Structure formats: C-alpha cells, structure tokens
Amino acid sequence: MRPLLLAMTLAGCAANNAVGPPPPNTARDTAAFLDTLEQRTFHYFWGLTNPQNGLTPDRAPSPSFSSIAAVGFALTAYPVGVERGYITRAQAAARTLTTLRFFWTAPQDSNVSGATGYHGFFYHFLDMNTGQRFQNVELSTIDTSLLLAGVLFCQSYYDASDSTESLIRSLADSIYYRVDWTWARARPPAVSMGWHPEGGFIPADWIGYNEGMILYVLALGSPTHAVDSTAWAAWVGGYQWGTFRGQDYVQFGPLFGHEYSHVWIDFRGIQDSYMRGRGIDYFENSRRATYAQRAYAAANPLVWNGYSNGIWGLTASDGPANTTLVLNGHTRQFHTYWARGVSALETNDDGTLAPTAAGGAVPFAPEIAVPALITMREAYGAHLFSTYGFRDAFNPTFTAQVPVERGEVDSVFGWFDVDYLGIDQGPILAMIENYRSELIWRTMRKNPYVVRGLKRAGFSGGWLGATGPVR
Image (cartoon, rainbow, N blue to C red; front, side, top):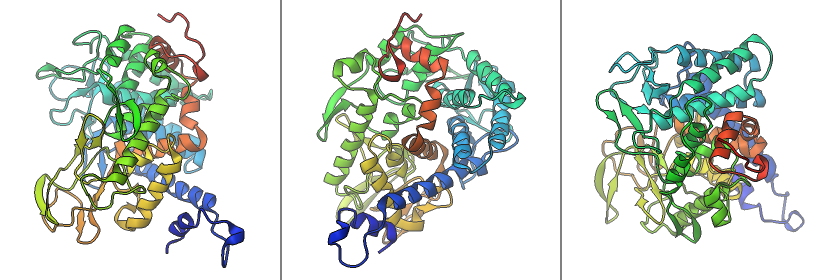
C-alpha cells in the first residue's frame, strides 16, 4: 500500500491501540502532498509562459494559443511562487512587468485582425507570439475580468518603492482604468458576454449565478467607466435557489462557477442583500455546492466507473471524444470539452472527472477536497499526476479502444487527458494557497477597487465593515 493511502487508512486509529508501529503523521503527509502539488502546478505558469510578452498557453503540451484568463491566473501564481520560495521577488516582478507592458501597449481597435483588444477589453485567445486575436474569437468580458483580477492582485502585492514595482502599480491602474464597462452594456444595466468586430455584441448578458460575480465587482469598482449599481440587482435577479443532494444553495452545475470569483475575493462573512436574506454568505454557498457534488458522486445515479465519496468533481474540462458507445450493456454519450456539472437544474455528466473541481474547492471544504485529491493521485498515479501536477481530466468508464480527440486510453483504468489547462491549473494553485496562508485574499482585501465594487454591490460585514454611501 502506498504511504499516503496507508496514512488515510490509519487516520482513525488510536496510536496506543495499534499493533506494530504507530500510524504515519497524516498532517505531515498532507502538507507534503500540498507542497508537491503547489510547486508542480506553479511551474505550468512559470515554465510555459512566453517570457517575451508574458502570454500563458491555454493548454500544454499540445500546441496552443494563449488564454487571457490563464494569464490572469499566471499573474496570481507568481507571488505564490515568491512566498513559497520557488522564485525570487525580483524574478516575479520582472515577469509581471513584461506582461503588463504587453497588455498596455498592444493594439486596441475594431479591426477584424491585428488587434489584441478594444475599449480596454481583450480577445479571449491570443497568438502566443504576436499577441494578436486568435482566429475569430470574441472580445471576452469575463476572460478580461479574470485577467484584470490577476492584474489588480499584482498591483496590491508589489508594494515596494523601487522603479519596477512602482511601474507595475502604474500599469495596473492604466490597464484597469481603460476598460469601458459602460460600452459593454448592450442591454443596460447588464454587461454583455462579449463582442465580435464582425457582428457586434453577443446576444447574451451576465445575469444569474456563475463565474461572472468577479466581473460585476470590477465593473462596479471602476473609477473611470463604472456601471450603475442596478447592474448587481440585474445579475442577482437571475439566481435560482434550490435543493440538491441535501444542500440548499444558489444553483449552478459546474464547480468552476462556485470557485473562480473566490480566488481573488474573500467572501467569508460578507453579504449582499440576497445572501442576507438567505442567512448565509457566498463562501457557505460554495461549500454547500461542493458537498452536493460529493454526495452526487457517492450516489452515482448514472453508474459511472470510479465515482465515490473519495473521488468526485464535475466542472468544465476536456473529455475523451464526441461519440456514443455501448459499454457493459449501457449506451453512453461522451463529449470532448464540455461544461460538466450537476445541480437541481441540470445533469451534464459523461463520466469525466476533473481534479480542478476538488482543487478549487479546497478552502470551502478541505476535509473532503484534500482527501479527494490525494485519493485521485494514489488511485491513478502517473496516468493523472505528472510534470505540472494533475492532468486536466480523466474518465474511468471510457475503456474502449476507439479514436479520441486527445489523451490516452488504458483498457483497465480508462481515458486520461495528456494536457494541462491554464484555467484549471490556476484555481488549484491559488485556492490551495488561500487555504494555507490566505495570501491572495489578504492582499486583495486592501485593493481599493475591489472594496469599492463590493460596497457598491451592497456587501457589508466581516472584513469589509459597514456599507456607507458609495456612489
């Protein structure tokens, strides 16, 4: 039996009643596992980002364009590397400065090609070398927001008086100030999901609970182009409260929607009017969603291989193939990249699990999320855990020897991705660090734009204090 699995097996045994040597120090083993996971995941961002422009690949090792959201997670990762001793502060600051200089000076215009952004927003995917729009992707308001969250984290973290860190703060201000949130309100007061130079705004807005919470906090906090405070009411107006697997919470299926905004904002003890009415906060809401997913996996109503109390987690991730197979007498529909998730509203489940679902939930429910990560590593070894930590996804049911879009199929253990995804690596690293040291949360509590945005949304209590008149 492997050491970590042995530690988990013996965790409940009393040392004075044990036969033979005492059980291992499970706290020490867990800390060692988290150390390894953080360090390997960090090096996805440090080792694969283009040092000439700061652009981080959407995925690796498959050839890839850059994801601006992955850049936001990279900017967040660098200070974690400093605090953990993986790199020096000077190295992190230099890489950060390169990144911010690129985004500040890159072309902003409405041309179909050759630009990086428009009205302060940026295209979802960029060419890794030129930094220009990749193919015909949209100008993404949410991915720009995830990038900006990393930018503002750097602004608050790099607080020294030397020229490099001073310039980081100035560039962060400039990049954030330029974003014209009011322009993106195609149907006021809500913010549109995106825009194409070929056809204008996407006919969908950010309304209802999902990862877009960070977008509205930043849009409300802007000192230059802030949206009206009624935008928060429009956003909340789409919430759907419900009960799923014994938990009462605002429903959203994929766990990333319960995790992304929490990477940068400490929602513990602070409430808007909606959560005051429910008697909880958004942190507790995410904790309940985490427990609901674990209960779903334990019940395993669709009878997928591998699901259990100890292995769970549905979120947007890679998958094996877009195909229908008959396996063990069951007709199964599988997908490639898909927003997997379960709630009272939906069941999008093809047997594919993603470690980032549990990794991003570590602060909410460490007592179940950390053991899930350990169990995944112990159960699947190098199939799932390798150079940069956890590969993106795996499907223990998919054992058929048929063509897959990417990844490898083991006839016993199932399908395993070969890629790591930046937007899934980021929450693993950041949320484990928030659990262990609160680094990102502590730093962002000081950011005046985030504080202003929260207060304009009506949040109060806890570390935020009372809400006064905020225009």
